[in-house]
Amino acid sequence: MIELLKIDWMKLKNYRTFWILSVLYLVSIVGINYITYRIQQHIYEQQSTKGAAEMIVGSRPYAFPLVWQMTSYMSSFLLFVPGLMMIIFITNEYSFKTHRQNIIDGWSRSNFISVKIVETFIFALISTAMVFLTSLIFGNAHEKAFTWENVHYIGYFFLQALSYGLFALLFAILFRRGGLAIGVFFLYAVVLENLFAGLLNKYAGNIGRYLPLESSDNLIPLPVFKQVQKQLIAPQNYTALLIAVSIYLIIYVTFIHRKFLRDDL
Image (cartoon, rainbow, N blue to C red; front, side, top):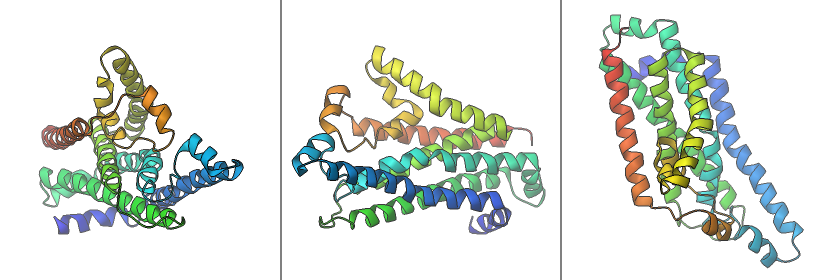
């Protein structure tokens, strides 16, 4: 597998779009958290007392131990970028017939699609590592002592990043054309699933939170305005959410693998 990954890396290392999107994505993780951090600081500075600010937003979200959760939550809004990258990379294989060339050169179909799935795991790991480092930077900017409490949200972010990556890979394999795959991916992720989740939560006992992307999104709630959230949002069943996310990940990998093995090249 290592040798196959090295060969596939040769396709990416000279691909300018890959580097531009990767750098922008990683910088944006720090950027979106810095913007939110400055807003949080402004709220505290504008309040006459610390207690007044805490009544509005609760404890400082970028101080330990909440920083792990806050950074993961804010960074999750950028997960469409690695999803977009996965779609571009896979659909380019179809457009330029490089997947056929790999198979002619001796790869099996299983080898080819397994490499793409592993690369999705790698992208999720890199995203998670960046979120971890960002959490350390902002957490250490406050006077509160370092703690590992709530660090499990970094693990939840990894599951969320993996869910978005494999979901995007699935759309790329299904539609093969970049524009179509990207359009359907964003339409479902931004509009349709939110619509379905809202309707199911309202009329079917909150089961909308267990839809494919919603289940991973709900692993990381916003760690501020907790009193308001308790009144508006039903408590999360994290065990059920983790089971749902795990099942979806298995379904994604199984479907992607079988679909590519059976499709015409």
